[in-house]
Image (cartoon, rainbow, N blue to C red; front, top):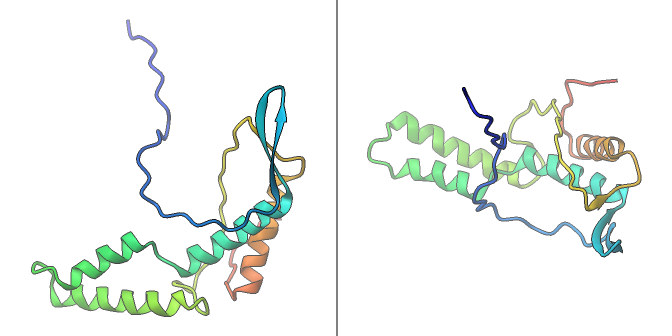
Length: 149
């Protein structure tokens, strides 16, 4: 007979991502029944969503850019490979100026998040995140081609 064995769907591993602090505002730590609780205000999620969609539309991770740049010196790369890599790097520089996104079709905003038990939000989190998406699209000339009521 087969025995039950539980496996996390997406187990955490090493994360070499470089993060930056957006703000220290709109969050606080409080104590409840001898536990520290992270309390967040709607503005925190709105700011986070707005910045996330602005960044993902305009910036590539340094580790990704390094891999694209490595194609230029790769002896096995074809002339076409190097041409494409060079154009991608040029586009990344232009996009990093935050005027034009990496791709003109930026029209799908999907957010999936999980919140631990020690994180309290006494508001509609979906609404706060949606406001951030709205701000990102309307303030950064992003094209929204799909909408949900």
